[in-house]
Image 1 (tube, rainbow, N blue to C red):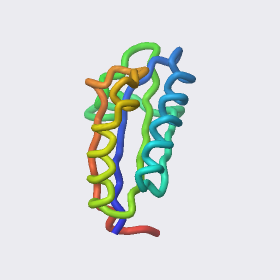
Image 2 (image 1 turned 135 degrees about the horizontal axis):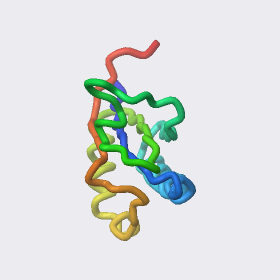
Image 3 (image 1 turned 135 degrees about the vertical axis):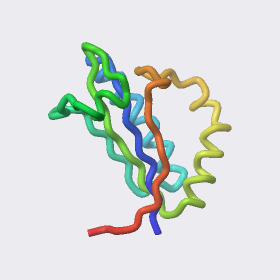
Image 4 (image 1 turned 90 degrees about the vertical axis):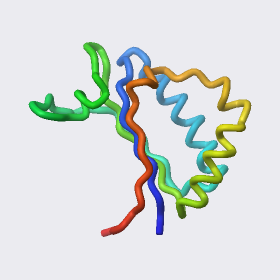
Length: 115
């Protein structure tokens, strides 16, 4: 069954192109290591929440946009092996993130249904 890594972060609007460049670089790496699909989405209609929201979750500040992305892997085993290789990759180690990584939300999910 496929395995999905999901990410939500807040990116300064002025860093949109830097984020896209960063995402394209990471996507190339993910695909080289077995990812089936990489999707990056820039927040367009992300409402304020009262109890919880994407904006609240990443502590989005004025002048930032919420970004939602995911990577689909053929299995958790392929994903785990890929992440191990990414952590050892010198190109990845020197990569500067165009957002505050401390506010990024990340998780691995087992896909249970595809419609």
